[in-house]
Length: 122
Length: 112
Image (cartoon, rainbow over all chains, first blue to last red):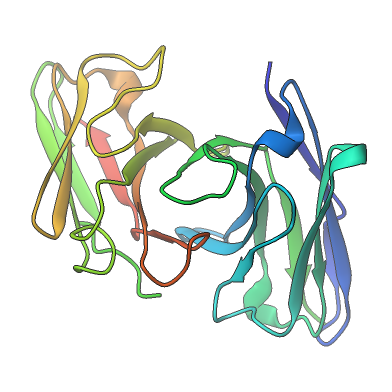
């Protein structure tokens, strides 16, 4: 069974940092690209960042570019999101999500975690 | 990275059929056959319902179907059931980068 379990969310002040983690199981992690997708309270889904199987290609939404860094450790079956210079508008439930392809090209998100809540407020 | 356009809400009675539209541009929906649809019940993670415009993952009811014409994709649900009441999101591969995905704003389906 495919499982993605996020952790690391919490309440943080504007301008501070937070690191999210996603532990996966039930599939061969380095056979897939991975993504972070967020959902602000009561709002829709927003793609945040993606990474290919070998970290050879990485992408970010314009809203987080230069502040967030995605990474993965295939030996630990884990995906990460380092979030710096956090803003109130970054408040959201952050989902770890698996892509259907190894490079992400032409792929889609096929599995989602349950999400970890990040609240940015003073 | 503009969001795809979906109607905010649609409704139908049990047994009826509904369609949800998803409009993008030639740079996403219109340029690729890589549109997917997700169902999200309150407090739950999204669930993949349709991928590559028309394909259903194993376990998804045949009452769900997808199509596309030019820059607009559509999700059709036939024989509406109470458990279909949920939010639905479309998503597309986009020209902006190999990894970028664009989502629609979501459509709230109410089963009357």
